Structure formats: C-alpha cells, structure tokens
Amino acid sequence: MPDSPPPPESLSPMTTPALILRWFERVREQFQLGVLSGAAFNELLQSFQFSDAQGTLWTPGARTSQWYRWDGRQWTPGAPPERLQLPAFVLASTELPPLPLASTAAAPSEPRAVRCPKCGAANLGKKFCTKCGTKLPLA
Image (cartoon, rainbow, N blue to C red):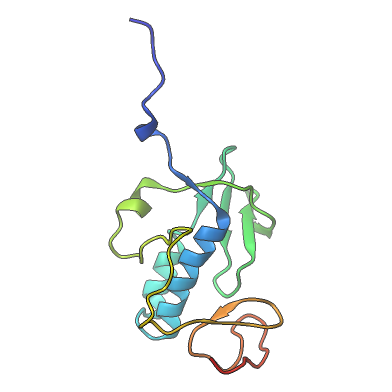
C-alpha cells in the first residue's frame, strides 16, 4: 500500500496573529487585575511562542502588542506571517483562557475594554493606556 498523507486532523492547527493577540490580551488583563501572579504570568509567557510555516518562532511582547521573531540569538521586532501554528498543548490547556473566535462577542455582563484613541490598545478598567500612557475616555 503506498504511503498516504496524514489525515487533516493530525496537521497543526493554524490561527492568525490577531487572534493570538486577543487571546494574549485576556491573559495580560488577568495579570493586571491580580487574578494571575507575576510568576504565573511569566510562566504563561513561555506558552506564547508560535511557529510559522518555516519553523521561525514568534511571540508577542509582555507589555505591548509588538511581535518579536527569534533570529537564533535574540528576539527582534518583526511582522509575523498571516498564519501561525498553535501548539497542541495550548489547545488542551485548561490554565489559559479560551482562544477567542473571530465571531465571538463579549457577554453583555462583562466589563468592556476601552480602546486607546492614540494607539488602539485595549485597556480594561484603566484610566491611562497600558501601552502608550494616553489618558483614556470614560467607558
């Protein structure tokens, strides 16, 4: 019997950098609200490393939404490709908030994040933008 390709279910699931950033913002908000300790947040940062089709690692910055690429020696700022691979352990992890879907809307009872008028960063329960320091409008 000739070798056949693996079934689609065995391929690495892919997602967009924008969805990963939305997911990361939820983790960062949990840290900012005191739900996660600094040690737990730093440990989760290790989980936010995603490969592209060529095997290059990408990660969002801990304090910003800037993407960084591992060049073999250090993390350098860069623009990730349109699709990144999700590691299997991320999909099964119960410690991380669920990955948001493109059509997922926040429940009306949840506090809404305020978008910074200067840089566009989402800020939950803040008076000043956590990315650029601009005073935020009241929610």
